[in-house]
Image (cartoon, rainbow, N blue to C red; front, side, top):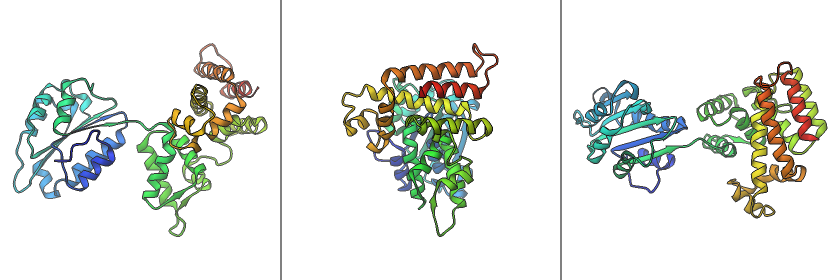
Amino acid sequence: MADKKTQATFDSIMRDLKAKKYAPVYVLMGDESYYIDKISDYIAENVLDSDDRDFNQTIVFGADTTAAQIADLARGYPVMPSQYRVVIVKEAQGLRSLDALERYFEKPLMSTILVICYKNGTIDKRKKVVGKAEAVGLVFESKKKRDYELPSFIESYLKSKHVAIDPKSCSMIAEHIGADLSRLISELDKVMISLPDDNRRVTPEIVEREIGVSKDFNVFELKTAIIEKDVYKANQIVKYFDNNPKAGSLFSCLPLLYSFFQNLLVAYYAPDRNNDNSLAAYMELKSVWGIKDYRAGMRNYTAMKTLMILSKIREIDAKSKGLDNQNTSNGDLMNELVFFILH
């Protein structure tokens, strides 16, 4: 059985699995399916030899079974000579009740590795089933990455594959793909395949070519121009978007700008916003490098203007969905928003 830890993490679970330290129960839950799939797939592919899986590995889906049936499967002994029996429950959020599992967790079979994959949410941690699972095994909550965590995730992932990347390329990928890690990894793998053996480095030009994000005129460059209050460049980019809708749209700009100005407002409430380290800690940033945009934002926008901008973004979002707006195009709405922000 894996060593008990105060809080199970993806890295700690994978480290124990690779060392063949198995727990009898794994409850994997949360909004980020990537880590849940990685752990359950590793168990499915590595605990048993291929010859043993036909007899000792069972995969079921929550909507097609019951907790009582899962408990019965878990109580079955492995067919010799295998040491373990593996039972994996996918889409466990489809189960109507977990009561039978709660009873199984009170006395699990140590030769069974039971994996519960509960996606798109979490089991209420106040329920006994969670505490009982944690007492005998591991409970892991797979949380969505926050926007500011994505660049470091991208850099770490590529570094593990012996590929380098510059900060601008990181930002381009992170803000274009977003926090869907499965899609993000797929895009990164595609980029890596395109790299020559003698130059394993991702550049903005490669991101533009392989992922389709323009290195010059894209929503990220527009955000930077707005942060720096570069009126000429911002209007130049908006005009480019009018002629090249695929390069940037109102729908891709709104969440990006709203997220920035929402965080900028948070920065204004920091108890010691003049100290880089204190501000970075208050905003839960991993390094002071991440606050440079907010420093520029505070130089160019007051707290009151920031509140007004957030309100305007909500107004434009509503208009883009047809509320109190019958004729204004998305391009005109974009121009209206950028003009309001910059003046």
